[in-house]
Length: 266
Image (cartoon, rainbow, N blue to C red; front, side):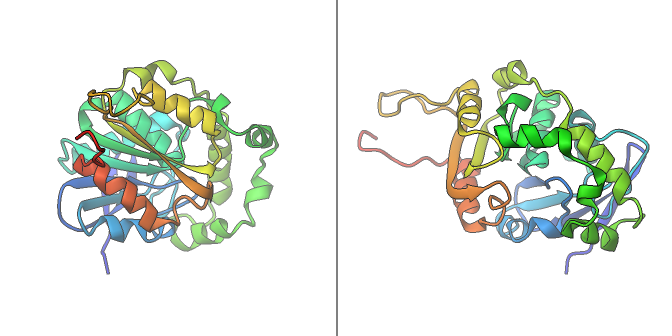
């Protein structure tokens, strides 16, 4: 069993676990999640990497602090985490909110991110599915307090009664402006975008993000393929992305190793 540790940073005690051997890979979980609820992807990644899995402000075993939960704030926490552990540079895998944080980390601290895997991400609020955009203004604390992840929160949190306060911050996060197109366009960090074909971001938005990163060109024409990549998971909703670990590994490992399938002309 992996024994977790705490890193003191930005006024909080951030819980994290380290597993495996190899090049460093930071894993960032989704909203209302924790290391446990990320499932089998962490131990599978730890077969070939030294995995640093952390829990964000107010999530899992990390305490909440008197500060809004925003993507820039969470990205700065990850940057501080790397400094505390003397990690100069690492690959990063983020899912959902963790993918947004990974994007912000690469935007704000490009020197710290070797390669980024962003699963179920968007760079603009307009990229969310119309049904989801319509649901955001209707979100309330009362809707969330009886969800299964509320009980998970109470089992792990330093303050078991703090869930309603966390929900308020997470609802505010959903409404936070996201207009990162110019920042994404300037990124030099290779990004593997992973999305379900029935994800919370539209396919059109996901493809546009790939094009912003230099993707969408024709291969087999003697040109170097873009460093960034796109993988769409069939018959996959947002919450089903993280459960398909074998498929995720099949996308992630060649990307991190820099391997590409060989065509007829190579």
